[in-house]
Every structure is written in structure tokens, then in C-alpha cells.
Amino acid sequence: MNDSLSWPFFNDGHRTLARDLDAWAADQLHEEGAEGAEDVEQLCRSLVARLGEAGWLRYCVAKEYGGALDAIDVRSLCLLRENLAKRSGLADFAFAMQGLGSGAISIGGTVEQKRKYLTQVAAGKLIAAFALSEPDAGSDVGALAATARRDGDDYVLDGEKTWISNGGIADFYCVFARTGEAPGSRGISGFVIDADTPGLSIAEKIPVIAPHPLATLRFDNCRVPAANLLGKAGSGFKLAMQTLDIFRTSVAAASVGFARHAMAAALERAVSRKMFGQTLGDFQLTQAALADMATGIDASALLTYRAAWMRDCLGVPATAEVAMAKMVATETAQQVIDRALQLFGGLGVKSGMPVERLYREIRALRIYEGATEVQKLIIGRQAIKEFSAGAG
Ligand code: COS
Image (cartoon, rainbow, N blue to C red):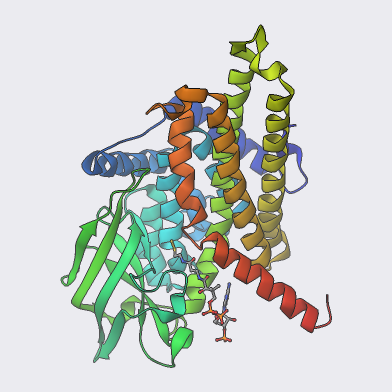
């Protein structure tokens, strides 16, 4: 039931990668978790370094810039995230943010930008972050208000970015700001900005239910050379969306990993917990719960690897299929983890229990990189578009 590596979406390279990573993770990762902000920052820094040393971060960039494969392969990213998430939410986070934080450079950067940043990201020597959301522009990215004003050979940035993962520990940020070529989404540009640039500061570190580095950034008269522009001026919205098209699929994969971890814990509990003269797993109610969980995980994995395969093998962005995968996998994982926790009874809510940790870890995935409601918007709009074009 769980041998998804035999699915036709994968080649032998993927199968070897998943098995090698799984063996490394079993040996190296031990439920890395942290409670305090400083602790979590230190842990993340060390995880990035270890993931870099072991070579796993090479899958975040193309071969020309120190990567493992000719181009970013979404199935590899997904297999890596699924298997990291099965062992450690923080290791998965550290891996994912190197990819998301440098994705806009891979897609839209100049050769110089790629040489400077991507090689170091792949080695785990520079920590990356993606700075898109704002206090008043989360789902509605086209409404973002931070500005980047052209001034001679420079741009000058002002405004705030919030919910920025790796905020405070990143060495550079891919930042999106309004440059004003046109109203709305057509007047936004991307920039790569080093963390130590004068005028860029951490306004607030944000504690969350599953601790990881997260912050609000403030730009106050922050001056960067025009050479830091990512892609063409005014193309930043599309660049951000193209980046998310790759990494949303990997969020789905991480959810599958979290759900598989919960399923394994639930099965262990079902066969070992005695009650009313039998085991928990002897109750049909438990079997029904396990059936729903197993089916949900397979459905999520199928949608995830279909979306990844479409991008890798058909060369299409597959935006709607990516949205389906992200929506179904994150929502299903939440349900699977909740049911697993229920099977543990009171023990399930005890701090430090694996299911308790998973219960906290999964929640943000239904929100970040596009909340479930945004994914529905994308899928619904695409269905109408195809119907209107006569393909329905
Ligand atoms: N790839 C390339 N181009 C895309 C695209 C994609 N995936 N999605 C949209 N575009 C283009 C559109 O084709 C359109 O181009 P034109 O101006 O040339 O016509 C432009 O971008 C605007 O698209 P659209 O009208 O669909 O934009 P909306 O403002 O309606 O927003 C949503 C669309 C809601 C889907 C978008 O804002 C979104 O994804 N929001 C969630 C953001 C998010 O994930 N935030 C989390 C940040 S990271 S933790």
C-alpha cells in the first residue's frame, strides 16, 4: 500500500534519491524541535549547514550553479520534502526555504546573481528567504504596498514584509515591491537584497505554534543597486507566482510526509493498545478511521506527484493541478493527524508526543504559500477558463 516509489511518475534516479535520503534522515534526524526563538534559529542554521554538507540542498538549484540535476526537478524536491517531513518538521522547513528563498533567482536572475547566490545556497553557506506577504496583502498579492523607487542607478525600498520564514537568520531575501510600471499586479518587481543592507531591519520576530524562524521585515530608505532587480521591472508578480508554482507542490509533499508519520504512529498504537479485552485495531471504528487515513494519504500523494510530473515531464506550469495537490494534501494531512491523535487518547495531547508535535506542525501548511481558499480560487477560475474556451 505504501510503495509509492513504484509509481510511473518516478525514474530509478528518484527511487535511489528517496531511499538514500531516508537512510540519511533515519541516521541523522531525531525529531528536531525547539521551543525558544533563539534555540530554533540556531537549530535551523545548523540544519541548513548539515543539509548542505550532505548534498541535499543541491536539488534546490540547477547543475550549472552547483546543483545535482540539469534543472530543478519538482519530483526530487517533493521526495526530499516528503522524507524529511517524515522525520523532522524543522529539517523539512530548512530544506524548503533554501529552495523557495532562491527560486526567484533560479527563474528570473541574471548569470551574475545566480553565480553569487545559488552556488552558496546549494552548499548551505547562505540562508535564503522569500519576502512577498505584507500586513495588508497576504492572499491578495497584487495589492502589496511596499515600494521600490528608482533613483539613478539604484532602487530605494520602503515598507514592510511579514510572515517571512527565515526572517532574522537569512543572509538574503527575495523581496517583491511596487515599482509602479502599471497598477496592480503589473507594477511589481522582485529584488535580491542582502540581509545586512542598511535600511533593512527585523521589526519583529513572530512566535508560532510550531516554532521556526519567522519575522516582520522593515525597509526604511533601503537603497540597492539596480543590478539587484530580479528579471524585468514590472514582472515581479509573475515571478512570484512562477516560484510558488514549483514550491506549492513541495508543500503538498511535506504534508504527505507528516501524514505518513502520523499513520505509522496510529498503526503502532492500534496494534498495541489493549482495551475491552482486545486491541484498539480490533474495533471496526478504528479500522474505518485507518481506512480513511490510508486512502487520504494515497490520494494526496497521487495528486502531488501528478503535479510534479506534469511540470517535469510535460514542461507546463500546471498551476491548477499544483493548487489541487496543495489543497488536498494539506487538508487531508490535518485530518489524518487529528485522527491519529484521537487514537492516542489523553496521551495524544501531551507535549512532546510525536502526534502532538505533528498536530501543531501541519496547521501552517494550510495557510502559507497560498491558503486553501486561494487554491480553490485558482482551481475554480481555471475550470471556468477551460469551459469558456470550449475544453470543458
Ligand atoms: N504563473 C505565471 N503568471 C501568472 C500566474 C502563474 N502561476 N498566475 C497569475 N499569473 C499572471 C496572470 O496571467 C496575469 O497576467 P496578465 O497581467 O498578463 O494578464 C497576472 O499574473 C495577474 O493574475 P491574476 O489576475 O490571476 O491575479 P490576482 O490578483 O487575481 O491573484 C491569486 C491571483 C489570488 C492566485 C494570487 O494573488 C495568489 O496566488 N495569492 C496567494 C499568494 C500566496 O501564496 N501568498 C503566500 C506567500 S509565500 S508564504
